[in-house]
Amino acid sequence: MRGLGIDAVDISRFRAALERTPSLRSRLFTHDELQSLSAKADQVSSLAARFAVREAAMKALGVGLGAFDLHDVSVAKLSSGQPTLRVTGRAEQLAKSKGVTSWQVSISHTETVAVAVVAAE
Image (cartoon, rainbow, N blue to C red; front, side):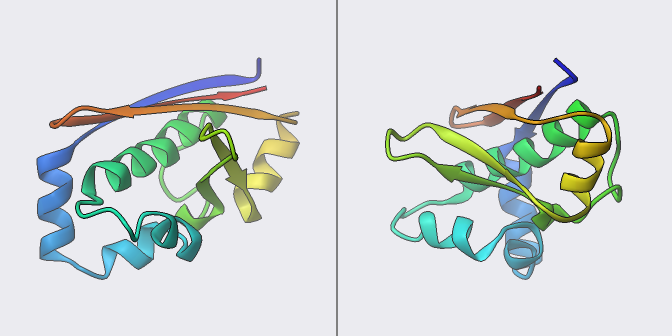
């Protein structure tokens, strides 16, 4: 294990931020992520969980905001429904420099909080 990160996002605060600044959706999330959630009536809890994944990935790599672009880390789902991490750009370069060759990700949310755990292996 090279690193482990966890993050929690308050969904109501995240909702307020998205309402206040609608462009945040495209600044924070990839086109594929937004498309994968387009059928959901309320996407905010899922988006908050994906934001938590980005923060948890930074923590797993031992870096903070600005170390890589937020689009460099994204969430996709396998055919089984299991979430998987996509890492590109500066995040991928940083991970390689730290010997990271694979990732594990777990996400969950309630009505009020979204959480993510990311393991860099």
